Amino acid sequence: MSDTAPDTALPEACPRCLKPATLCVCEGITAIDNKIGLLILQHPQEQDVELGTARLAALHFKNAVFKIGLSWPSLGKALGTYSDPKRWAVLYLGSAKAQELMPGREIVVLNRKGGAAEDQNLSEIDGVILLDGTWSQAKALWWRNAWMLKTKRIALNPRRPSHYGKLRKEPRRDGLSTLEAAAMLLSRLEKKPEIETALVASFDKLLDRYRTLRASTKVS
Image: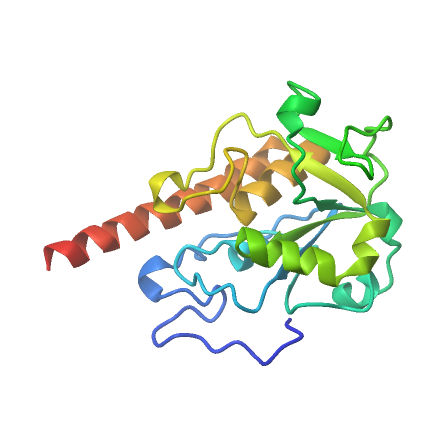
């Protein structure tokens, strides 16, 4: 699953999501049979075990790959099987804001200059790539993997801010957790709103457990 050293779960941690048992929400998750693939690349220094969502997002899909590392020679090496990067889209981390480019559109395809592309069609793509980490870590992943330049670049215009709320400060209002981004992208591209419903339910459950745990810790 990873191109780096094997993950080491924390004591009393779930072997699937690697979160402390008190925060695990894996029980009851049924993997979705998605046609559009999901590739999540996580920066090795992303250490938010408690509130990180990348691994949890991948667990929700049958057609998903989760990798930890800094760079891969090609999309095929990251996926473990050959795939044409021109048929994939990556959630781009540039300065472009989808709401300003195409108001009302939730997923905007960008051109090489960061503007809205003339062709907004994503019906033929094979998968989407999400870069997991802090803003600077995710940008490092982008610059270290030149093959991403061959993919389509997309930006999101979520109707609501992240459910993280005050638990984690996002650098931009349109910033979402990796799980929320996966939920939004695949539910829209596959036209299955139940995908977003399932993933967001798991996310909200995680956040509720985290708030409860933090509150009990303060009391004690």
